[in-house]
Length: 158
Image (cartoon, rainbow, N blue to C red; front, side):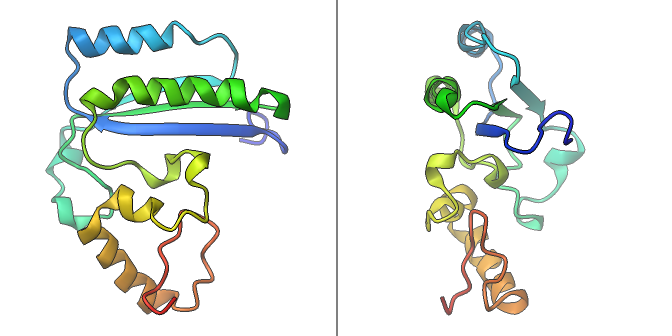
């Protein structure tokens, strides 16, 4: 992906799950999608039913397998002077979709304002039960927290 996102690229993501894709939701999506005005931005709506939805909720760490859809809003750019303007689009899209949102956010697409140092970002995204299962895995496989430069799940000892 280096050709698409060369070194020095900047990016921002927001995401949420939802189960309605009726006229009201489509109007909201079209409303913020009409504000796309620069190359490098995308809006994905993933359909999650079928096999994905039949996997038991507790079988994986994915935060919500019962939602019918998942929305990702993202952008990439090169100029740091554009950070505020271009992140505002994804934040606004995320905000206007909140009335339709369900539990859970995909940790790889959490917004930068949560940062890798935000201690509750992963806990909030996964929910308490899944988070505790992930802490147990972290205790077993990474008790020294070497893999911490992400939305971290800290081991129970630190």
